[in-house]
Length: 349
Length: 281
Image 1 (cartoon, one colour):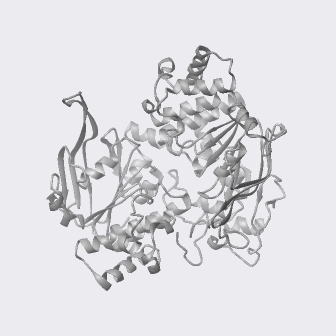
Image 2: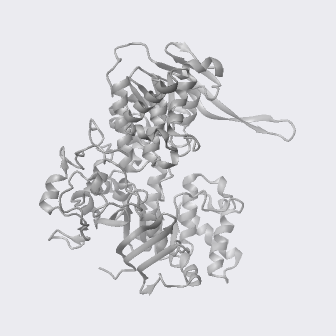
Image 3: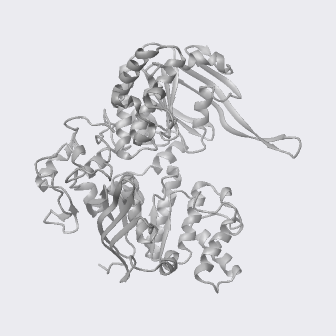
């Protein structure tokens, strides 16, 4: 296994608010290797997007407190200066966002905006050379008639094409790491399939390391190598794609897997659901934050377990649940499928 | 999924050759109509009492326009919309008002569809008051009962929308839609703005309410998995037309139309092994 390109250690991000400190990210660690896709899965408020944004210094604000370490090729980023971060964004780490409409300036031509981004980092690039580069990039991401379309404005592109243009811009300076924050959530399924195919191709052919932030386990199954499941600011389970899907250890992961609708299976009478709603970060329960929603809660849960490997066969598969592996394997089966059994008392969203 | 009232032959809602075209106008002083956007281009379907018809399609397929045209929120260009056998296409606002009790809508965005300055009790109670169904303490009692029925607490009566999470707001929207005991509820992407773990709660709630009140749903969504789960029958829309219609299992398991096949093939399978198989194939 190659050395990690990006190494995140015990990352903590807190924001001071009027009502107290919101610990959005609370001790997240992971490694990313060249050509690897790490997916961070979670619901809104789980800290997945804040984690991603912090990696490239987008959460630096007066009220933010960032602790821990983010190392890119051995270089510490949390203490890097703003100018240094600016240089590094785009050049070494690029990010694409959920909404490609708001990520471009509507009054400039797409080609010009991308050329500007290139020239900001490589001032000696001529405008003509820059434009040629954009045409190349558009062709690489599958935008038809690239030569003509570089002169289009953002509104002239469809959602899927705009997302491709954003990927083209992200790739312009050949970064080593791509951070994709819900890149397909706003897109139709047929377009989503194309964009996921494109991301996979970039990984394979350019050895691009990718962090994929998503709430959609279907998307994860298509492209990820490793998965981190986040809940209330912490990683509650991490493992390889197959470990997470076929041997999940944390009840929250069971719930997420169980509540998916599957076109390839007969439909259940009722859609398995997770009771309740995610906790407020200002008012977390003591111990495991999933406890109030978990039907398997028992006497040990008021103490939050560390993220540990609990299975002898896999040191990389770690979780935060006190149940023994045998108990987990037994309790996660609900009507023959992995899922979270119905709650003992019904809580509501 | 309910069986209630299915033996009753006449459809509750019958839509025939519904068309909605939007003109594209050009010109400096005088607008000339140069072309049309054929948002809904001759669709026909029916919703029977107590059943759920799922309407799926991608963005721009015309499904939301179809809903609005059915409810007469926009005037259809042509075609017929019959509700309980009565033609409602082209009816004015005033003529529609008594019918609004029977057909309600649940919207996609639970953050945008509730007035932030009104209390929950007012939001849910307003339709009851406006239609003259209840007032005073009786109104309060009915609203509190509704809130409890959709999984909220009667103590939420005096709260404001911002105090609720997305899932709870959608429950408020559902309570409001159900206040007048409608026969048909049009759900336009009711769960797509919600977190995954909350989506299932809302879908199950809609299922339960259907059984309890004998509601018919026209359930519009782009997520085929959810549509298949909740629907008895599914209609697939593409470019303003219905390209395929059948029972939920028929459409999802043995699709006939090319577009339906393409749509189904693009849905990610949340199963890494099967996903790899499919990539190889």
